[in-house]
Length: 208
View 1 (tube, rainbow, N blue to C red):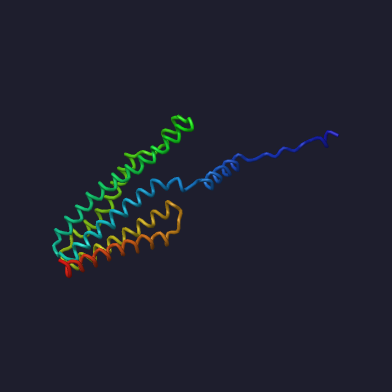
View 2: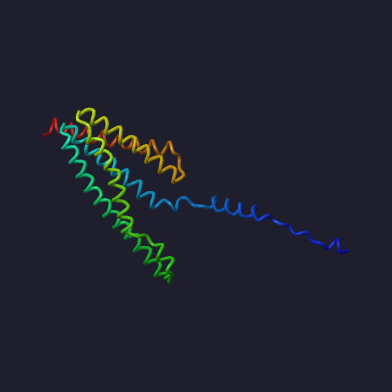
């Protein structure tokens, strides 16, 4: 009778439970949480790289002076970094105001929720720094080349390589398709440089 009433209780190995917990955490990790800072960093660096390179290609279409290209690139770096910082600050501050208003309507005033609010200053600084890091690449690439045609080719090559790296980093961190990410960013950069170069040269030869 006692044998029939015995209930077998399964015993789980601690290592198995720990491994299962770690697997669950890995599977449940939401990579979209990286979206906000990843978007700002990749957008800032890519924008700086493509914008300044396109400006330099545009001025290079009508002027052979290396100083003109460098000064144009530096002006684009400073103005673009300021624009990115101001734009990101205003955008994130607006988002913060919306979230604060929603918290007040719901009666939430927890410190943890306040700490989770987006930081406009941090976002602005990150965007400006990322823009400058991207913008400095074509300036450095052009600064050491004397021949005009070679200089333009080196700028395009350096920008293309940097775009490949940015596309790969964004895809890996965001767990998206690497090939598609690289193709999008490289083709977009080529189009921006080609359009700026072609239109500037056309305006210089026909209008001015």
